[in-house]
Image (cartoon, rainbow, N blue to C red; front, side, top):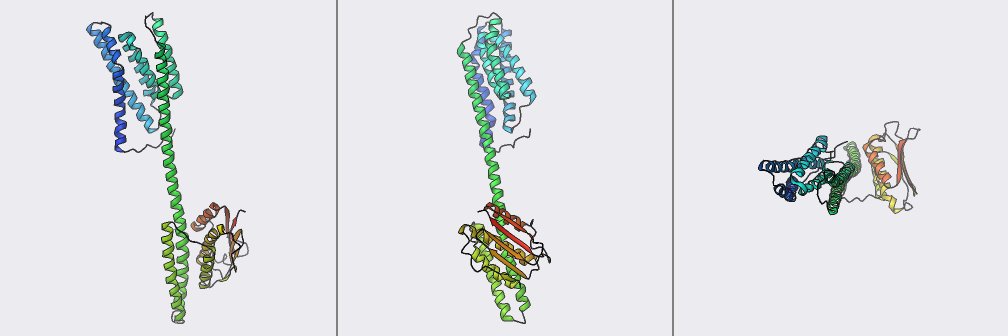
Length: 377
């Protein structure tokens, strides 16, 4: 069995956990006071009385040790060691029998202590079988030995009732412990998902803007000295793109994204023209439902970025319908415009699937490359 992760706790909680076994031992020391009085009432010689009290003290020490070891194992989420579960309980039974022998009828409370410790050290089914055996022993042992003890039925009810309450407390604690661990796992998964979402958004925003700025900067460099006015215009657009990229990054960090299909079509036209790629663009996108325009904008942004960055395309075509968007270019032979397993397309595929659609990206078999997103109607 794989051990469950150890729970982290505050120093105060850890101190409480360390003090609890000692508190339980003190409680049992008080409960067993009538048993100690029973040893005195038997009017034994001093030596026998001392032996009776020593057996009672030995029982308390053994009880404290077995209880602390069993609780420590439960806290770690592992099974109680067999040495504690078997040998420790047998030692407690022998010491309890000695105490009962010295204390007489007042020692029957020892069986009550054994029923409680059985629930701590044993699996639930085995513990209840042991408790049933203890109840039978409480009735049959005095009768078989011919002892004139009055075994009150309410004592048996107390054993069964307290055992049920203890069992319920342990099950409740185990359930709470599992719930805490499940909540920690859910929180960890949520943090990981948020990290992936942020990385995906940042890649989409920065990748597109920097690609566009790079293309325009290259164009301005080629125009420098031959067409300075055009070069200065391109550099102004580079400046604008970088400012817009900074704004997008800040918006992404703040959790606000304003990606629309219309704005991305304008950007695509500008970027493709600067890269020297002839583009066929749709005249209007009013027929696209409002709830699909953002996701189509993300698809268009990633696809155009890949066309400019990775392909040698000379022509691109963007087709938009109410339920799908397709970006095609003729540059697959000159270099794959973004592998289907690239981080950008992986993040885009996750985004499309989260919106209820499917994404396909790959060569079309004629030297071109198609990136298409289809929404489920």
